[in-house]
Length: 402
Image 1 (cartoon, rainbow, N blue to C red):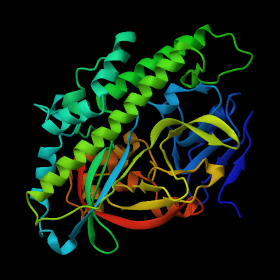
Image 2: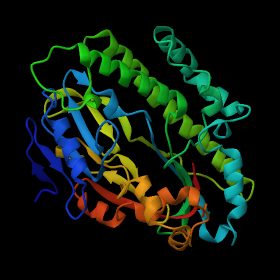
Image 3: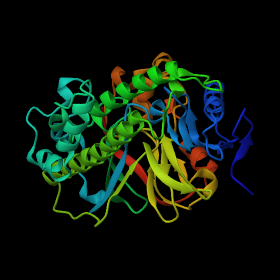
């Protein structure tokens, strides 16, 4: 028995892993708009954390032949998760975790605006840019597209950003300590995404098509066009920068822990996965572009991360390689309501009660990220049991929000 339902659309069907999980009508409309495009390959897949997004439905998998939709990738190019297991256990943590949280915030700047950047780029950031050739690659992109600026890449690599980005210290089912974080390509990735979304809209206005594009956010580049190649180059840079950003930040968070805890080691390999990106993959016998907007690759045996809200649990998972989902699982719990609705519905007292077990901010500035603004993570995991198996269950004890 399959774990998905099949919804009809004007062109390709939609496979939805949403059993037992609420889905907004607006998200269904967005998904049907996507599926109506003639270059969709096979079908569109929706994960159980699906919700309305800018440009396209968050929690969607969009396989395309000969085209890419920049707004489906979005502006937080390469946003994703990283998790590292340590040799520490719960008994190695102090009763109060406030000093650890403060040290993490000092080592990894957070928030949007100048306060979220390094005042002076640490040596690890400069090294990451040099070793990955990131600065030189961006120079080539900016030379062709001067509206994309790159002056912040050194000051922002190893920084968290804002919104739903976070750094957490967690305990697994064995009481082993993990560090987990969520971030992307920061300001430069945003500039790349915003610029190419605008260029795609301009191209759409000039195209003579034999079909209707129901939303200008579904504007696309076609393979063979110069802008298609330029976008692939730029989005690949953004994805690589995002991965490096998480690696530098993780090293600095571990440094913060080492200043306050006993000596410890980390597992030889970390989990580091994008959930806003595009990649060339083979599915149903054809090579296609797969855009995962708020979704994680879950190929057979591949490890991934599915975080819950800041007061709930998170999961390290192993993919089952389900072809119907294009080897994909959800990227989190998914929002149950908008940020505006959450601020109107919940109080600081609600947030304090729901995060009583977590050392984190407990003020009005994070109400939009309060746990009950998100879907039930257990329901989300149940709806995708045919896509992943749970390897570890993590519960947060420290959370730093952007």
